[in-house]
Length: 227
Image 1 (cartoon, one colour):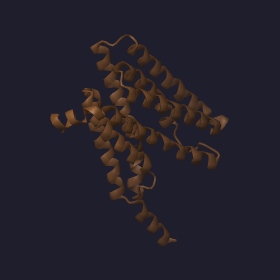
Image 2 (tube, rainbow, N blue to C red; image 1 turned 45 degrees about the horizontal axis):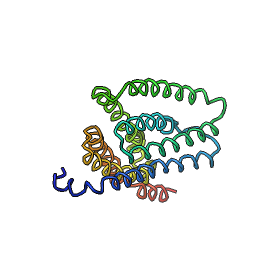
Image 3 (cartoon, helix red, strand yellow; image 1 turned 90 degrees about the vertical axis):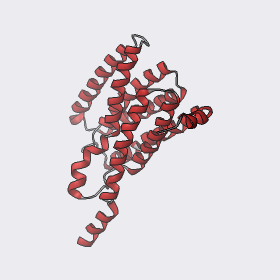
């Protein structure tokens, strides 16, 4: 995909590429504020899943641990910032959740915390190739599941023939970050980051294609005509 000559030429800019990728990753998380603002406007979290926020906390903690093992500054500060955003969003979600409905939020939080603690404890055993390999595999699966979250709405998108429910800014930021992290992974010669981002690019392309197949503007126009 990238020639050795090209990678050698980009080597002096490795950390800048990582910083740019981190900026776009943070931008992807900032998009969560639109969800929080909608929750504030409606005054309730009914109809909104906390999986993105709670899952983001667990994923960021594990990514931070893995990044520290790799001694990759760009990955470390990105994980710290995304963890901060995820915690704030989770607290916001909890605040606006009716007390009678908080039990499911607490169960998800406890479950995620338990799994995260177990994986973190395993990763804390050392930096052996076996530990790094298994931790990298788990992180790859979790990161891909996180990127694919918007596709959970696929059935309703096809039924409505509209992509209006998809967060376009977040998906664009995710696509840009994925490309840059792929390049960064090649530069630091990390197989897990490279494989993870190649698959993630495919997921991003699928999500972007939905905006072409089911344009939101077209669906809105039909709705107005019917009125």
